[in-house]
Length: 430
View (cartoon, rainbow, N blue to C red):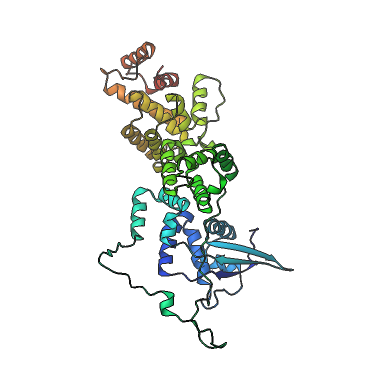
């Protein structure tokens, strides 16, 4: 779709009529993925369709803006979302003095199709979270009917219909259901590196003919949903083979198990770095500035990885992701909080500790590394002041212990007497 102009013309063509169930599917299953604006745009376009002709009158795009309060840029942006999720096909035609668009509205999947689609199902789960996902799925659960004791008496075609070969044109033979085109659902087009997948399969001596269209579709859906490389997916397919046949249920389970083991890929925010607007502009070449720069340029994932000397465990990553998502703390601030919790909790990440301190920093609008370091400094002073006879467990080095004793003995001095260099030494557990 090119740049939209308010004078550009459009028509809407629907591939079927929305049923009451379709409305629920759109609002409960599709809307969480594409957002309220895209959902509203789809519903408005459908409202323009004449149910007898399945085609709308020709109008300008300014009409959509007037009814939806969306700018032309927002219309274009949300139309792309609808196209990508499989609800709209867009066509364009250039004429001498105008540009015309045709928007073809596709029908949403039914609930069973949606929940069996590994891509959309997983995305909905991750968008809503476990609790809301279970509630939503329960809404679409079909009742289980006990057929015990029943005998099926459903009539078949031959029992009901008779084809009269001698009937003339214009007389009734059978009543056909071909007046309307079949409602069409479109699965999202998935870009997945199948070339790498098939290359690895060849090395594993798996014949290509065993990869049926159904298997290939499942591979693409699972690969995109769980961010699994083509090479690794080939290995999982190989592991799911049963006598020259790929068991799709086993494949889906192996992919989920692999994803749990490779848990860092399940998180997004932990890889972020400190935003430029909250970064330091200090170019001084001293220990404090270098340390601040490190906390600003390293992601929380990298900091934990360097600290632990290997891949972080899922529990720690879940804690950090929660801090960045629920409290919306900046990555550099989280890094300072990590160093503080390590120093105060025997080199461990304590959930209660970081959530408590993090919530306090959130209320104080702490956005920069310098602000976070000052808050950490204040916390250490407060703890030392109220626990004068207790040496923190993290203070194991003799030199650091001497520094702490000096702080205790000189608590009548002003707060700024504890230097940033000392704080860095304390937090880094010299």
